[in-house]
Amino acid sequence: MRKQTKNQPIAFPKTLPEGYQYLDDEPTYNSDKHLALEYPKESLSLRDFGYSDAEIEQCPTDYGISGVARLLSDEGVAALMNVVQQLRQYTVTGGERIQYILRGGVYRSRFLRDLCLCPKVSKFLSEIYGIAVAPHSIPLHLGHCNYAPDDLDRAIDKWHSDTLGLDYVLMVSDPREQVGGEFQYFLGTKAEVAEITRNGQPMPEHRIVSPNFPGPGYMVVMQGGMIVHRGAKLKAVYDRITMVNGYVPLDTTSPDFSRFSDIKAVDPHDVLLPEWARHKAWLARGRLDRLIDELPFTKDKNYIIGELKSAIKEVEVAIKDLADESPGFLTNYGDL
Ligand SMILES: [Fe+2]
Image (cartoon, protein in one colour):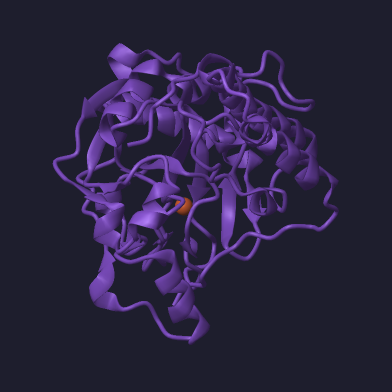
């Protein structure tokens, strides 16, 4: 059993990136008014998806995906809808995978920022995951919103696993009024999907799950880096909006799930590159703190060198990532 070490969550940046400002007129977040937390009734583990013990050992938790859980009250939904409609003007294209995404919304809306950083929600999610989590140490992964594409022939978001480990997908618009456009996940592993895609086959229908969301403000909580999922095509025009908020385990010893090559193709570099550096430095700080606390007395210098190397590894990864000039791309498995 891996020992859990809890670190302090990373602090949200004190300044805004250049060109960003907060909305003039928006609701003020109030967790008593806007949250209506209801636990999911069931959940699936990574084992249920077919992952091996060795694969699960590399993950911070064996949690796969929850049944439907509730996050927001009706008032919370109305407030978030007000904000995401105002933020629509800042959407960008996520390449061929997805047409309209909003990134960095927490630098534009105080409401979105405060909802995504809310400690009550982090505690709720920690209880669901069974490990202590905090809002993601890369703020671009907070409050990510997907908006419906113009073209109904286009999937809302193709089959993919997330570029981060842990997140929830929240229905902001009312899923009961939507025809098609379901959030769906594949009951299998990423390797299986890669194999299906390589063979040019469609995903087997009987292994696709479409959770039934009873209304806006409901969500699924998942280890999105391991679960292959998508937003299916809409069958009628509808202003479908979902919000995805990312989390990190407070125990920073497990491997980092965040993928740089994907987000560097999408996010503005003046925001992303410092966020990436801070994120990796935060991971290393957690590992260094652990080393300082737990390194035993020993003359085994190879062991000590190994511990030091492993503690600073993520900083070296960040330096390599930042020096790499390749353009990056948003990985996906298509939309068959
Ligand atoms: Fe996703």
